[in-house]
Image (cartoon, rainbow over all chains, first blue to last red):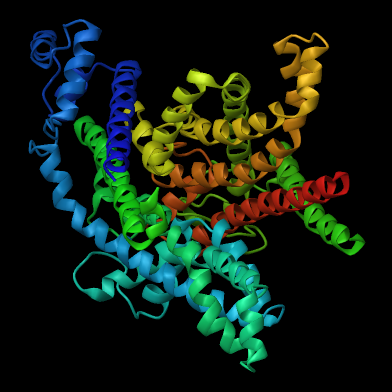
Length: 309
Length: 276
């Protein structure tokens, strides 16, 4: 158990280290001097004196090595600087927008599981039938249709044409429906195929033969006995899909003006708000490694076989 | 078996035909496109499809069909460049780490695990954000993010091949390590890498379109599918065609890549099955 947690913490440190190094290198190699950019972002005319003063203040006159060490130290101690635009600490800006993104990601995950279950079970029950064929086509489309285009289609059909649902903002639960659907639908159709394949595989198991010998219908066996086993790999994928939801939320938040992390980082990129962009990657890295740690811990609790190791 | 081969052929043929169609469209864009993709005609803005403008016009009166046809050039060229650069970086690393193993392999794998711990879109966006939006920076960002998964995949192939007995006998026959890699390992990974790349081609095109949609890739007025959708943001409520057709173009291209990859994958399985 201790070794397990230690390994994950080591991974976390390594990820943060890699991300910090990468962002440091990118800032160094990107055209334009950080001091000039910072002045421009603040609307101050970039005179030579102002630039050199700020360069000294930011430590840009030190050697690359000491700058790098200082940078690492700041990253690991949580001093991620202030936003050029708002002047507030990056960390608090990010935490302020985290709930909206998490809400969207969980709702997307919910839509994904609903689609996976409904489509997966129905395609497995009606194997080789019309539903199955539709499921196959949907899965193909689901992985080919870009999220942002699906978002447009949803807005056009349900907001503009039918006027049923709002297309932007985050004021009540109705606002969540379209973004969550856009986020979860595609992956849901793909996982439905996985669930179907697992369910059909399970039909070869001895316990299915035993149930059938007792006269239980195939569909009953599929839904009440096979499903439980076939769900395990799907649950295993929950971690990966949650990361996918958080990544995909960048697009979805932009389309639906959802006030979360993704929309914030895109805005920051347009404003050249470097501390926010850097902070965002490190924040995201910690978030993802943290989620993986959490999921592995849950497995450890659920599956006694893992604990024995 | 024969029936399955035919099925495979059908999917592969359809996919390849669509992709070749796209390539030809891009190649002969100036002759095929009915209008100049950049010419602004405010008198004819946001028109529905007609004989003059088969896919309608956008908010500046530019012909959407012509812009989609020219957009093939941007998407396909940048996707191919990305693919080439990624393979150029990842194949040597994968060959080395997978063949030599040991400590360097362990280290590289640790770095790759870290890179893959973050969803690629997050990292790509951050890199473009720090470098500044633009087509070249987007290509760099996608390559920087993509190489890790390629190395992981190719390395696993190399590790498996390196344990084969013919590698050992080649070594005993006095071949140098470099020659073994070149003659006996490299040709073996060709087909799986092709299947992997074909599927990834679709993902890369999606990636390019996504970044351009966010305004981080190709900049206006360049005709690019994702950028066209970005332009469409404010106008698709009035005229849905500005978003309908560029989106369909992306979907069709990605579907074709998937078909090719899926069919090639089946082919490979059948070929391997025959050998066994």
